[in-house]
Image (cartoon, rainbow, N blue to C red; front, side, top):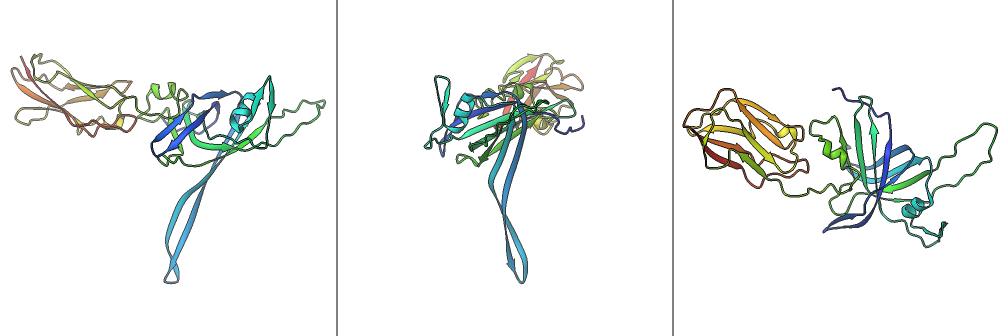
Length: 293
């Protein structure tokens, strides 16, 4: 499918960043800001050029601050308080000179012209007080929609400042989009493991069997290759076959071109280079020995 261009914006969310240091990051649960209209992200890169022998010799660049401007249908009093550090008591928003805006993460999704969505999270930023403008009603209604600006920076913990995924990326799975706004961190739920079938030391395996490797986390589709998944006879002869992965990217199957040999011994290997969608790899190669009936 051809790549699409961005044509939409919806599901704007924010989450409080409560910890960011050398030991890790912690976010609160994301909340939705209804009525997203526009989101503009403007990273600044600071560049310096070294001159030597009467000319430019080297260039060094470093990420600076990232300016983010959001335009929405409305900002409720509670959301203003959350983003800017104000207080709401008895339905009244109070702004104090000593209020300090907290660090916030911002997430949203954007429809592309090919019908697929792009999902975005910005990890660490502070919003500034927005301009306030009120205008009298005229004969022709004119919408007055607020804009609010923030300055984002990289996280202390790992240097990350943004993450993005596209539904039309080959490694995308439905679970990524379904859980995108459930949490900001995207931390792997557990270490990557693999369960092969047939199991190690299985005997009397049917000659018409497929060989499968089942992972506990979704893996990256680009890693489903003959270099990472292979079956060999005991003498080292590679078993030819079709290698596939299921829609959830958790089960890899090798369907041999011809049936396995009768009363033969085989070795099935899944390489430790296989990565899950969180970037984790297996602790070691998965090596299974089995024999046919």
